[in-house]
Length: 253
Image (cartoon, rainbow, N blue to C red):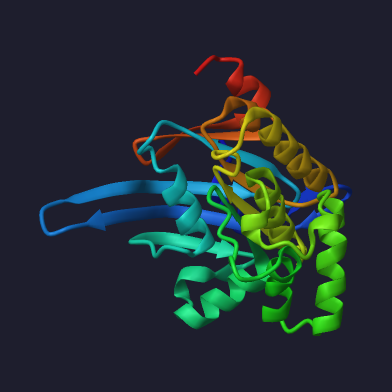
């Protein structure tokens, strides 16, 4: 397992160059509280994600997989520890700054697609570009180019309800990738898809990874995890394994 302390004062080498880690999480804790009880979902989690990695996060239901993604990306607050993304402490930011940082540095792919139903595929994909103040004409051009890359160039004017589940997920992937973010988070991106469509989504993610995109995917599917280079296994809010996917999957857990 990577030692987070080792990354405090040095860069890492990737593809012939020197880079700082994209993400460093130190002693991250998350507690959910109700009037009757409290549940610790993350327990002093430490994690480093380097440029260009394709990381799969696996574990049983309730192990903390999605909570980890939400806390590392700043979608949820944390109760202890620190998370830096591209050197910025995202939980030290106010909500506005954190939202701006996510829009600039991150892309998101969700199981339920989260497309805006009244917008066309092209309009959904260009939305993050417009939020980052890309001129409308340039945003539309880039959105259509990205839709072509995911095989949906002829579906750009269709609204989500006019698309199949697999097509909607490809629109969501195009939206996540169009701004070339530092890191793409995917939470069970194939959970609502059949095996053929799931395979197509995995191939898209692998192609983007091969071009240098950093991707972190939460999944219960060993087939999807098998497409990643690195596997993080969670249990009861802890990271219990972190290493090459082929080595960990071969243990049969």
